[in-house]
Length: 314
Picture 1 (cartoon, rainbow, N blue to C red):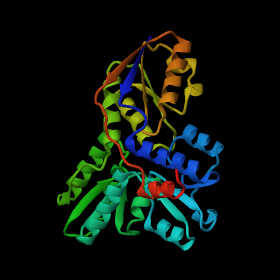
Picture 2 (picture 1 turned 90 degrees about the vertical axis):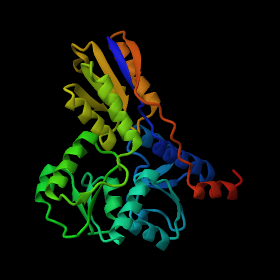
Picture 3 (picture 1 turned 30 degrees about the horizontal axis):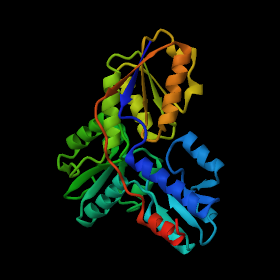
Picture 4 (picture 1 turned 120 degrees about the vertical axis):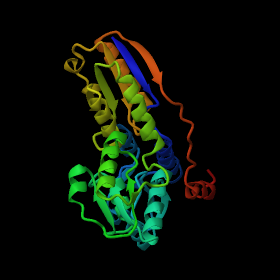
């Protein structure tokens, strides 16, 4: 059996920044450390942080007045910042800069009088945070059926924006449908789908050209990981989204001679390697990396974290 390792895979710069923010804040203030929502959508990572005293909550009224709270990588609505201010909470904002970019775009285009159509998943925390930038003013669509049902917003100018972690191919179909229905709708100045999402999807397409089965390491709550599985399935490959090696069974590998392995942008490399070890335990395999693109992106931690460390002499 041959294992093809997609590259790039695993943690992106935004996830590295978010986890680094929590780790360093925990080192300064100790437990409990409150985090709004899961810092990233990865169960093993969040379980490990919980064991060290991190408390994840979607309700800021659960955070004691005057406490430190980290806002997750997915982005938050202005209403959340208002609640935090009303409770005198000190915020460390770990929102991914690429999500912040979309929030700024929402406000900019609405101010210019545009109608804004947002392509995203209902109920996803990134979507909630983006829609919360201007409650009731964005038009959310998730699929072609919702595009067909969408009434004309009536604005002279229209633009679409997208959730950062979507499947590129799926989004293209929705965009094409929007353009057919509303010929005046404009593309955003630059793609909203993040570089890491695109790179990981390009990589999985490459390894799935010859694979019989594909394992995507990532949690069911991770939009970009679910998109990776969809991309693999779109290439006719049997694909599984798993949190870790214990979920792999003999039946999943039956008849496979080439196995593709990748990880979503919130999947730790050590977990991905443990999946490889598990496959090897079923059947001795050779491992071949397939690198379609190198990544060198790096995001600085929030300035508020640096100030916190300086105040505590860290």
